[in-house]
Length: 599
Image (cartoon, rainbow, N blue to C red; front, side, top):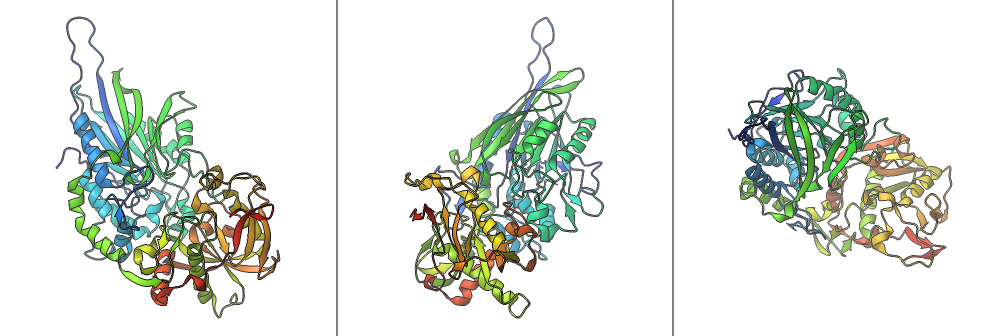
């Protein structure tokens, strides 16, 4: 058994014992030389961390079918991370390191989708999930649960958990009936020092309360997800009383203190900073969920006055966080003297050939799958300008969604109501080529595992919905130059929280302040009747409160589908055979300033 593998004694069923014990060999401490007082016993070790891997093993983009690249020339994947981890272990001594993750592991690429849906790990005699294979081979010690772990349902998550050689931690993922932890809340690891005194490092895992909203269909009645601060305040003192010298939190929660679900939940979505500030006894927090890069961020704890060090490595395996701990032996115990954090860039190293060889067959199988031809298109379409123009490629999503909902409601009480649809530009590089259309082309329009719902909305509610969406644009005075690089994402609003709604006609006056931008809102050539009723085809993330759009989360649900919208688009293209933008594309909305179109 490799030195860094740990024997885990705890489980979600026996969290009182819930300690995962590990042993490592430390580098020698400085020996006493000459006469005089003996120097203090000291020990240093490093906790490495990743987060939001989202199914990335290889430095590969399955939607473009080529090596991953972006404007900053980042690289992605566990094969790159493995090389960095090996370098750190060699430099510091393997027994002086731990490797953890902060969640969102099994969703995000076609590789992870394939082994959840096409050749699922849950089938009898089924495959081992590629992420489990890679993380086991690299030697992870623990991983927190992310919200996207629940996208494919609890059975897939439980099978993935079974396949991992390390625990999936979630102190605030509770059984809905017993309110006991449904997963191991923590793991404890012993690091052997040359001083004859082991260091006990506790890893506390916390996940996102938003799971209750975003994966409502999968978790309602099965699990509940209280706030991170509340559960950290419960578990950190227990870990200290169990003799933990160092407490590290792995939190699938951003640091900003904000939430995307408004008043849908009493808990904060991005609570890592609040945990550091409010809960004494934490030394460091590995931050996840927000997909931002934070090399080192210090938060002063209100009770102790001590700094807690936070770090968030960039998503998809683009960065590896290093928490470096310096400890000193004082009054019969190890005391943390200093903590620092930094991130390493995975584009500085080659992929680990051991990992690429291990999963080469799975990679090839998925590449063949995504390149299957499912139809053809009469014209090329792209999302390159979709954030500020009504583009046919977004109309395609809305057309498929509206058509699917009409079919589902046909013959029922709401069949006569007009069906509208919302869609977002999830990726600015998605495209449908002219000619042959493959699975990867269609799937690239919808990289998330969202499903489709139908909600009952009024004209007045839809106006407020559109006004809220239009806050996405930076206010730009009439006559002022327009720079598309600076036009969108006002106040940090991501592309996926800007909705274009098909079936209505409207202008967005970006010269006006947010909240009063929707101009000329009409339906079938007439001003929109505030009292009129409509059916909105909407993804489950939005319908559940994601993005905190008004009204939709509380609107009556008329229908819901369990299949991903991505699959609905793929099946639609297969059924039609030919994608013709002339049959669905129209300019229903545009940006204006004082009535003058921006583009």
